[in-house]
Amino acid sequence: MADSVIPPDDPARALVHARPDDPALPHVAVAGGTYTILVAGEQTAGRYCLIDMRVPPGGGPPPHRHDFEEMFTVLDGAVEFTFRGERIVARAGETVNIPANAPHFFRNSSDEPVRMLCMCTPAGQDEFFLRVGDRVDGPTTPAPKLDEAQRNERGERAGRLAAEYRTEMLIP
Image 1 (tube, rainbow, N blue to C red):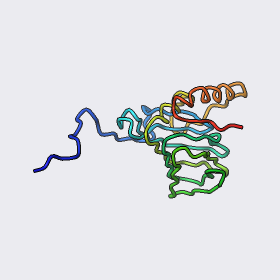
Image 2: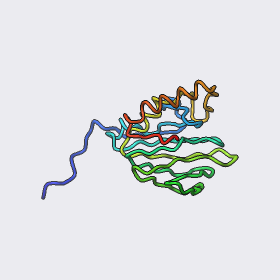
Image 3: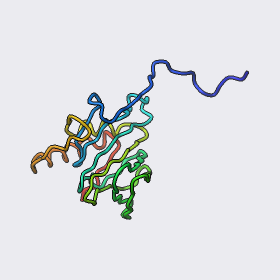
């Protein structure tokens, strides 16, 4: 039998079974929403991360771009994506893939909350969110109300850390 081109199993890596309401998972308020890190990069040898995003009406990040792929699957609601200046609306059951390096952002422009899964490959965005956001108790915990100084501090922190996480903020 010929040697396999697939490396041997790595028994040091474990099965990951994520439950979005698990209080042990990291839940973080970012860009007006509450994000739960379902599968962290450290659990996938850096190959990808999976984030459960709950985005309230009006929530979403500022324009940005990064050198990794980002894929969103809308579970509930509808969210408006702006990709290279063009807007599309993705509804429950639909998936949007943002190619690496492309300018984009999303906004919940509806009156209802949006829930979507976000996969980033390779991983790293999970760590970025944990460093720029505010830890919260659970996936349905609303983001804390921030005053203008606190919002500015979070924005400045994101700007300082962006390059470390292969991201460029495109704020005019």
